[in-house]
Length: 80
Image (tube, rainbow, N blue to C red):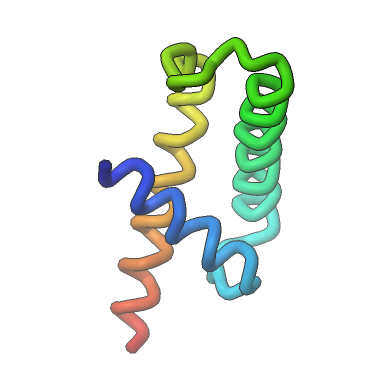
């Protein structure tokens, strides 16, 4: 559950452009979000993964996104 929570925090901060990350880090997060989105769109069109049982290929992507979201949240709280 924390994986999805911190991933959604990262997505929210990324969409509002208040990440506090450098250009390289933002590029990596953009690439990871793109991979997860393409994977989800492919499986939604083919209906192969109706219960997310094949999510293992994007799990590392989600872990990195969640860690980035956690770091963004900690950085935001430290500056407040």
